[in-house]
Image (cartoon, rainbow, N blue to C red):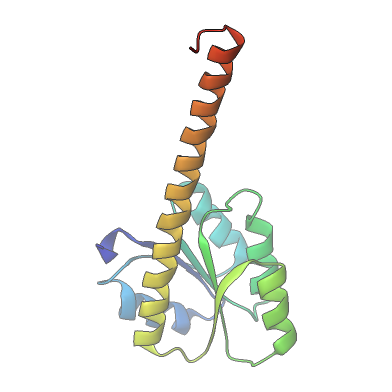
Amino acid sequence: MNNQSINVLYVDDEIHNLNSFKAGFRRVFNVFTAESAVEGRKILDTEEINIVITDQRMPITTGIEFLESIIPDYPDPIRILLTGYADITAVIDAINRGKVYRYLQKPWMEEELKISIEKAFEVYILRKENKELTAKLIEANEQLESLLKQNLLP
Protein backbone atom coordinates (compact mmCIF):
# COMPACT_ATOMS: atom_id res chain seq x y z
CA MET A 1 0.00 0.00 0.00
CA ASN A 2 1.36 3.39 -1.01
CA ASN A 3 0.46 5.82 1.77
CA GLN A 4 1.16 8.82 -0.50
CA SER A 5 -2.01 7.95 -2.38
CA ILE A 6 -4.14 8.23 0.76
CA ASN A 7 -5.98 11.59 0.79
CA VAL A 8 -6.60 12.73 4.37
CA LEU A 9 -8.68 15.77 5.34
CA TYR A 10 -8.12 17.11 8.86
CA VAL A 11 -10.62 19.69 10.15
CA ASP A 12 -9.78 21.64 13.32
CA ASP A 13 -10.33 25.26 14.34
CA GLU A 14 -6.93 25.40 16.07
CA ILE A 15 -4.23 26.43 13.59
CA HIS A 16 -1.38 24.90 15.62
CA ASN A 17 -3.12 21.49 15.50
CA LEU A 18 -3.51 21.78 11.72
CA ASN A 19 0.15 22.75 11.35
CA SER A 20 1.26 19.95 13.66
CA PHE A 21 -0.82 17.39 11.74
CA LYS A 22 0.52 18.63 8.40
CA ALA A 23 4.12 18.60 9.67
CA GLY A 24 3.76 15.10 11.09
CA PHE A 25 1.97 13.46 8.18
CA ARG A 26 2.58 15.37 4.93
CA ARG A 27 5.47 13.08 3.96
CA VAL A 28 3.36 9.98 4.66
CA PHE A 29 -0.09 10.95 3.35
CA ASN A 30 -1.62 13.45 0.95
CA VAL A 31 -2.80 15.94 3.60
CA PHE A 32 -5.58 18.54 3.28
CA THR A 33 -6.47 20.80 6.21
CA ALA A 34 -9.44 23.02 7.00
CA GLU A 35 -10.15 25.44 9.86
CA SER A 36 -13.92 24.91 9.78
CA ALA A 37 -16.71 22.63 8.60
CA VAL A 38 -17.40 25.07 5.74
CA GLU A 39 -13.76 24.92 4.59
CA GLY A 40 -13.79 21.14 4.99
CA ARG A 41 -16.89 20.88 2.81
CA LYS A 42 -15.19 22.97 0.08
CA ILE A 43 -12.25 20.55 0.04
CA LEU A 44 -14.62 17.57 -0.17
CA ASP A 45 -16.29 19.28 -3.13
CA THR A 46 -13.02 19.48 -5.06
CA GLU A 47 -10.85 16.55 -3.90
CA GLU A 48 -11.37 12.80 -3.59
CA ILE A 49 -10.89 12.37 0.15
CA ASN A 50 -10.43 8.88 1.61
CA ILE A 51 -10.20 9.70 5.33
CA VAL A 52 -11.84 12.60 7.20
CA ILE A 53 -10.46 13.44 10.63
CA THR A 54 -12.12 16.16 12.65
CA ASP A 55 -11.86 17.72 16.07
CA GLN A 56 -15.06 17.49 18.09
CA ARG A 57 -14.98 20.88 19.82
CA MET A 58 -15.19 23.60 17.22
CA PRO A 59 -17.25 26.78 17.13
CA ILE A 60 -20.42 26.89 14.99
CA THR A 61 -20.32 23.23 13.85
CA THR A 62 -19.02 20.40 16.07
CA GLY A 63 -17.03 17.54 14.61
CA ILE A 64 -20.00 15.16 14.92
CA GLU A 65 -22.34 17.66 13.22
CA PHE A 66 -19.82 18.05 10.39
CA LEU A 67 -19.39 14.30 9.94
CA GLU A 68 -23.14 13.74 10.03
CA SER A 69 -23.72 16.56 7.50
CA ILE A 70 -21.36 15.08 4.89
CA ILE A 71 -22.81 11.55 4.91
CA PRO A 72 -25.53 12.19 2.27
CA ASP A 73 -23.08 13.72 -0.24
CA TYR A 74 -19.87 11.96 0.79
CA PRO A 75 -20.72 8.56 2.30
CA ASP A 76 -17.45 6.88 1.31
CA PRO A 77 -14.68 8.63 3.29
CA ILE A 78 -13.87 6.86 6.54
CA ARG A 79 -14.44 9.16 9.51
CA ILE A 80 -12.21 9.60 12.59
CA LEU A 81 -13.08 11.88 15.51
CA LEU A 82 -10.34 13.52 17.59
CA THR A 83 -10.99 15.34 20.81
CA GLY A 84 -9.16 16.49 23.90
CA TYR A 85 -12.18 15.71 26.05
CA ALA A 86 -13.29 12.26 27.16
CA ASP A 87 -17.00 12.96 26.70
CA ILE A 88 -18.84 9.64 26.51
CA THR A 89 -21.95 11.32 25.05
CA ALA A 90 -19.83 12.72 22.22
CA VAL A 91 -18.36 9.28 21.59
CA ILE A 92 -21.80 7.65 21.43
CA ASP A 93 -23.13 10.46 19.19
CA ALA A 94 -20.09 10.13 16.94
CA ILE A 95 -20.62 6.43 16.46
CA ASN A 96 -24.38 6.64 16.01
CA ARG A 97 -24.86 9.90 14.10
CA GLY A 98 -21.52 10.54 12.42
CA LYS A 99 -20.77 6.90 11.55
CA VAL A 100 -17.30 7.26 13.02
CA TYR A 101 -14.76 4.51 12.41
CA ARG A 102 -12.41 5.52 15.26
CA TYR A 103 -12.42 7.90 18.18
CA LEU A 104 -9.00 9.12 19.33
CA GLN A 105 -7.99 11.46 22.10
CA LYS A 106 -5.83 14.54 21.79
CA PRO A 107 -2.98 14.99 21.98
CA TRP A 108 -2.66 12.20 19.42
CA MET A 109 0.17 9.70 19.46
CA GLU A 110 1.68 10.02 16.00
CA GLU A 111 2.22 6.27 15.42
CA GLU A 112 -1.26 5.37 16.70
CA LEU A 113 -2.90 7.96 14.44
CA LYS A 114 -0.78 6.85 11.45
CA ILE A 115 -1.84 3.20 11.97
CA SER A 116 -5.48 4.28 12.43
CA ILE A 117 -5.36 6.17 9.10
CA GLU A 118 -3.79 3.16 7.33
CA LYS A 119 -6.41 0.77 8.79
CA ALA A 120 -9.20 3.20 7.88
CA PHE A 121 -7.88 3.27 4.30
CA GLU A 122 -7.99 -0.54 4.18
CA VAL A 123 -11.67 -0.32 5.15
CA TYR A 124 -12.20 2.37 2.49
CA ILE A 125 -10.68 0.12 -0.20
CA LEU A 126 -12.67 -2.95 0.92
CA ARG A 127 -15.94 -0.97 0.87
CA LYS A 128 -15.13 0.41 -2.58
CA GLU A 129 -14.35 -3.08 -3.92
CA ASN A 130 -17.53 -4.43 -2.31
CA LYS A 131 -19.59 -1.69 -3.98
CA GLU A 132 -18.03 -2.46 -7.38
CA LEU A 133 -18.64 -6.21 -7.00
CA THR A 134 -22.23 -5.60 -5.92
CA ALA A 135 -22.80 -3.42 -9.00
CA LYS A 136 -21.36 -6.15 -11.25
CA LEU A 137 -23.59 -8.75 -9.57
CA ILE A 138 -26.69 -6.60 -10.07
CA GLU A 139 -25.77 -6.09 -13.73
CA ALA A 140 -25.24 -9.84 -14.25
CA ASN A 141 -28.59 -10.58 -12.58
CA GLU A 142 -30.36 -8.07 -14.83
CA GLN A 143 -28.79 -9.66 -17.91
CA LEU A 144 -29.90 -13.12 -16.76
CA GLU A 145 -33.44 -11.89 -16.10
CA SER A 146 -33.54 -10.31 -19.55
CA LEU A 147 -32.41 -13.59 -21.15
CA LEU A 148 -35.01 -15.51 -19.15
CA LYS A 149 -37.77 -13.17 -20.29
CA GLN A 150 -36.68 -13.71 -23.89
CA ASN A 151 -36.56 -17.49 -23.30
CA LEU A 152 -33.02 -17.49 -24.51
CA LEU A 153 -31.67 -19.59 -21.69
CA PRO A 154 -31.53 -23.35 -22.31
